[in-house]
Each structure stands twice: as C-alpha cells, then as structure tokens.
Length: 243
Length: 243
DNA sequence: TATTTTCATGTTGTCAGACAAGCTGACCCG
DNA sequence: CGGGTCAGCTTGTCTGACAACATGAAAATA
Image 1 (cartoon, chains in turn orange, green, blue, cyan):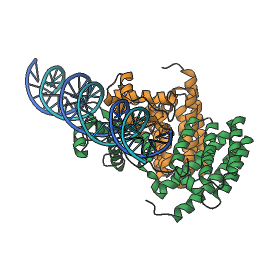
Image 2 (cartoon, chains in turn blue, red, yellow, cyan):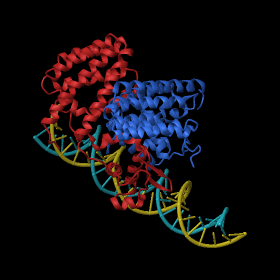
Image 3 (cartoon, each protein chain N blue to C red):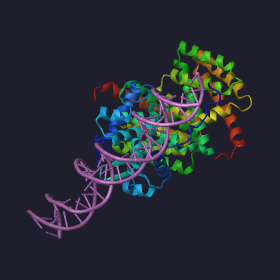
Image 4 (cartoon, rainbow over the protein chains, first blue to last red):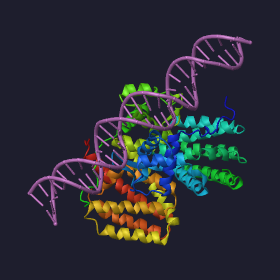
C-alpha cells in the first residue's frame, strides 16, 4: 500500500485561475509591477490573458488574500507596498527552489531554526515526548533499508521536536521551511550511508534532550544538519540538469 | 502630511468573498472540519452562507491557493492534510496576536531569528551597508524626542540588516514576524527611556558588524531585544483590556 | 477667478444562468 | 462475480447584467 507512492507530484493539472494567479505573482515579484503601482483593470487583464472574468477574479482575490495586492472597489488593483505576507505562499507556488542560491539560503535558515529549536526544546520537553522520540529512533534503527519508511520517521522526529519546543510560531515557520525542502530531504537520505548516520545523530540529539542540556542539543542538531547539507550538496553537484 | 496617520486600521470594509474566506478558514482551524474531511458542495455552502457562487468560489480559491483546502474538479473540496502553508496567512488575517502566549512565542521567535541574523550579517555585510546603518544611527540620535520618526528609523535598521545578511529566506521570515509585532514594537519605544537605550544598543550592534564579529553581533542584538522584551512586558502588564 | 457640486465614465463587487469537464456510484450485461 | 455504461452531482469557466464605488472633468456657485 505504500511502495513508492510517496513522492508523486500530483501532476500539475492546474486550474486556470491558479495559473493566472501564479503568473501574475511571478510578474509582480519579478518587478514588472512595483510596490504601490496600479495593475491594469480586470477587463484589460482578461483580454491580455485570454481568460474570463471569473478566472481572473479568482486569481486576483487569491493574491489579495495573501496580501500581495490590494484591490479597491471601483479604484483598481495595486501591488501592496509591504508584500511581507507573501513569503510563504510564494515559496509554495512559484517553485523558488530551483536555483542553487535559494537552496543554500533555505538550508541555512533550516540550520539556524532547527538548531535553536533544539535548544529551547531541551528546556521544555516532557518525559512523554522523550519516550515518543525514543520509540521513533528505535524504529529508525530497523528501517535503514527502507528509505521511504525511514524518511517518514525522520520527519516525525523533527515534527515532535517542534511540538515539544512549545513555540507554535517557530514550529510553523520551520514546518514551512521543511516543506520547501521536502523532496531534497528525502533524496539526500539515499546518498551513501545517509541513514546509518542519521540514526546516530538523532540519538545524540535525543540524549541531549533527555539531559535537558540546551547547549548539547544545539550542537548535536547542528552536526546532524551539517552532514545533511554535505549529503545534498553531493546530490546537487551530481545531478544538475533536471528541468 | 504625516501627523498621526501611521496606525489607522483601514476600517474593515471587507469584501464578501473575504469575509467568507475568513469564516471558513477559522471554522477549519477551529476544527469544525478536520484535515482530510470533505466540505459541503458549493451549492450547499452558498445556500448556507447566503452568498452567490462567485463570492463563495473566490473565497474557496483563496483558501485553496494558500493550501488550506484542496479542490478536486467534480469531486468536492477537502481540508488539506498538511495545512502547513497556512501559518502566515492565519497570522495575518485572524489576529492571533491577542493572547499573551502568542505574544511570548512571537517575541521568542524574533529573538532567535534576529540574533542569528545579526551573526551571519556580521560575516557578510559590506562597507556600503555599514555606512547606511551608521547614517541611520546618527539620525536616531537626533530623533529621540519624535517617537513616530524614531520607530521608522529603528525598523529601517533591522530591514537593512536583513538585506545585509544575504539570505532572503531568513529575511522574509523575519519581516513576517516583525510585521505581526508592528504595533507592539512602536508602542514599546514609548516606555520610559526606550529610545535612548535603543540608540546605544543599535550602535553596539553596528560596532560588532563593523568588526565582522559574529559572536559579538549576536550578543549585542540579544541584549537589544531582551531589553525590548522587558519594555513591552511592562506595557502588557499595565494596559490589559483593549478591544 | 476660486471653490464647491454635480455627474459621466470607468472600475470593482455580486448575482444568476448556462454549459463543459470531471467524479462517483448504481445499474446492467456478459 | 467482474467489468462497462450511464445518469446525476460537483467543480471549472464563460457571459451578461446591475449595484456600489472612485475619480476626474464639467458645471454651477460664490
């Protein structure tokens, strides 16, 4: 039931309004329209894009909802001055992760976030949560020959840690960042002895958490992620030209 | 032209589809429909909410765009199993920042992010960027009697630092977090000698950046933010019942 | 002339209807 | 019992219509 059904991209049969939304979004982030500038009217955009008003409006309301644009009834649509809100959604939808630079930045962000999270987690984790993590590590030990199974356990470990840190804000941010790197994470485990290493490293992190030692937890997590980074760098250097 | 036009909430003249989107979103996050569950059909929702299909669909496509729900053509709408993407937008639209707990979490997240950002910034900042920051600190020195002016400079300082760190991912995350705390940040400067302190602390951070000393930069930034936290804690303890 | 009022025009908000495309389950046939 | 067919429901998209709103120009007023 779960052979290799894991990473099948749900074939991009995107709806029209979604395509329009993405296109407009990338146009805006690319700078075709700058913050504060007025977009063409709906009628013009419809004609230019060759879509009906419904589709266009669904796209515009989506962009307005995430705060990329601002629409004034009767007055037109404007690129928001502070498109701060956009950061998550833009990652999600416009595939920023193809450039190596973006990848490096994501990895760095994850390293920082996950390291510090481990630190505060060490201060706040409960015994029950420690038991959960322990069970996971045990399972991981038995799954080093099943990559797809293993990577789920790996992810669970980090998710439980996120909960155990008792900071939903950080947890959510980290979930978003991880989500962006999902494919990469699962692939990097396939590199050489990625999984054996990961087991050892996770159990080191767990030890530090068990001792409620933030400094040690941070250090263990940092080592884990750095070796992960080495893993995917090999991957990236090796398989360059897809899409 | 800019007297007290700063923090005027743009009077919630919300569009119908926006109201619907928010209502459905809060229903979902509240657990009325759980991840994986099927929402009622568009026709039913229209009748229940008393809105036309356009408005409802604009709401649904917005929620689909941010990944809260998944819509299958001909098959219905379903709450997404992994609503991770939602975190930003949920902050933005449903005012999560009223509870003290959320506030503490945001402050902690900001402390971590901004501290680490200062660290990598120290490694990568250019001379031109240092000059920019220096000019800002000078201006701050002369603005300790104009809070609204001062807080803009304060914000600019952090924004330039964000750029100088050369990591857009972290920068964007931090922008989002700061955006959530915007009101709080500006208010906390009014507390006692908030601004005089801030000038000193910013210049300490700047010194560390000028020396390209990550450790020192982190420490200076941590002190800055911790004193900021003390500031707003006073504020929060003092003025409890607004709204 | 200077200021205010009015208003025509363009733009967005919302509704309703129509049809295509897609999904689902029941029914029927081999 | 297995498999194909089809009716009915659901979403995707287009079109047309009208209300609400915004804006700038023309007109009325001081």
